Length: 128
Image 1 (tube, rainbow, N blue to C red):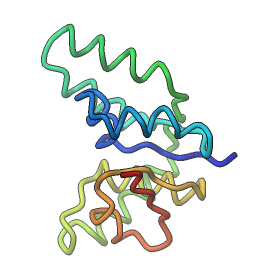
Image 2 (cartoon, rainbow, N blue to C red; image 1 turned 135 degrees about the vertical axis):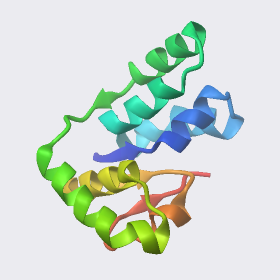
Image 3 (cartoon, one colour; image 1 turned 30 degrees about the horizontal axis):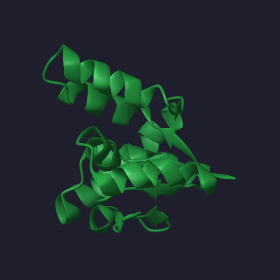
Image 4 (tube, rainbow, N blue to C red; image 1 turned 60 degrees about the vertical axis):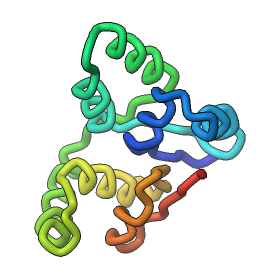
């Protein structure tokens, strides 16, 4: 079973109780081992507006294995940022996700598939 690195967009949809997201997260473990990156965890925690939302984020994240933050990915993400920031408006966080997925040779699950197409060799899965 291969890993699927889950992007922030899918988690946000889940927190909003999107029916499509609920179905995706119920089914994803049949095909993939879904994992979460520390930068995604940080984005979700930073987006919590109150304690209730923070608890919701923590409950959601506790259902997934968290990948370690690797310095090699940080260096690779800076190269990707230099290459794609001005031409595609990429954020460092997206470059870090792409660098990690490329190093691990895993797909990235996202609702922003157009956004991640700039990264050559990155397999992107848009589940719905």
